[in-house]
Image (cartoon, rainbow, N blue to C red; front, side):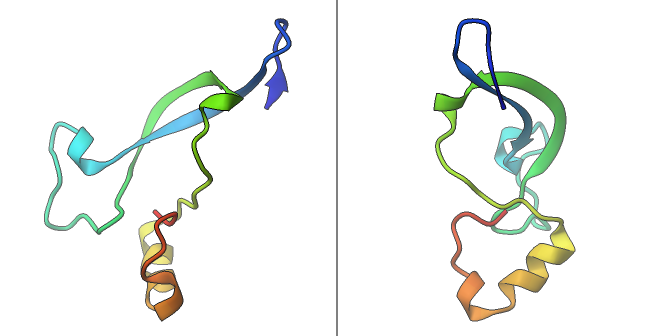
Length: 77
């Protein structure tokens, strides 16, 4: 995150896509909150950020969601 020449706060982001947004679409093996990492990166104004979330690998996701407290987390992918 940095301040641009125009005094706007800017952040560099890496894009992730929901399976439904890919050419293959959602597959049976995709989990409830599955995401696919892309090589697409760009710079955006900080004000475009809607909320914070946690993105982890599949094994870690399955480990975290085994506990009752984490099963319904909307911010865990």
